[in-house]
Length: 86
Image 1 (cartoon, helix red, strand yellow):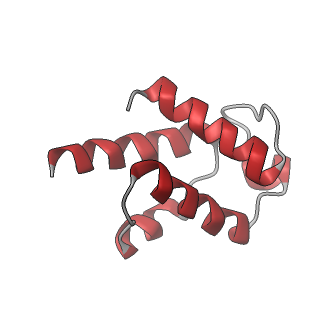
Image 2 (cartoon, rainbow, N blue to C red):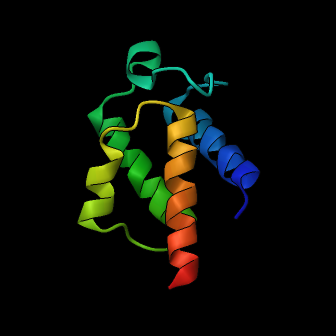
């Protein structure tokens, strides 16, 4: 999965699941779009679907500091690489 594919999928999730259209890639999602912890958990579920595997507790914990779409893309990209090496 390329970074462009990841970004496209993440932006589609934001539009369909959270009704957030075209967020800036460096927008603080919490401050600029009222993205809360419940939304974050829902997003993690969507990321699991995208990757085709469950996230570990440690992977979920690492996601709690993410605030921007670019950070989400970095996170998903690192998980995809990790899973490809397994």
